[in-house]
Image 1 (cartoon, helix red, strand yellow):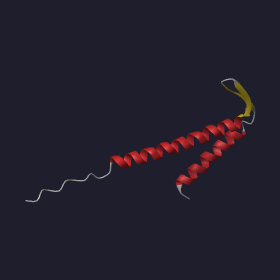
Image 2: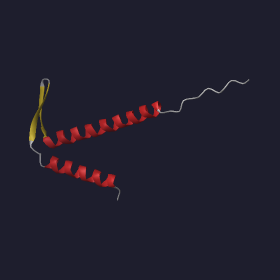
Image 3: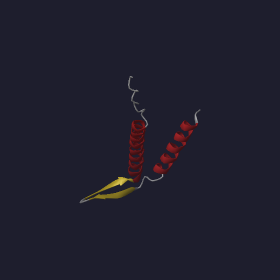
Image 4: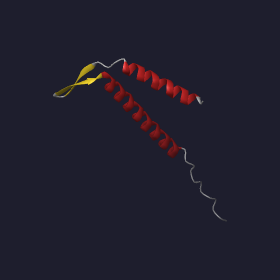
Length: 80
């Protein structure tokens, strides 16, 4: 099994353990609204948002790095 897959499974397992230990509802206030949400949903949402934004950032860096390292066209010597 590849190391990357083992690390991914371990991280997801730890996130789920932490999340399921935090099932207590907590108040969430956004401007004038206040709702009660189980802490597990807030933790999973924050984890997912971080994972998604990290993936987008990685994709952006890969594309911008690829554009910077593209081979430049060299002018050909003039014919004599």
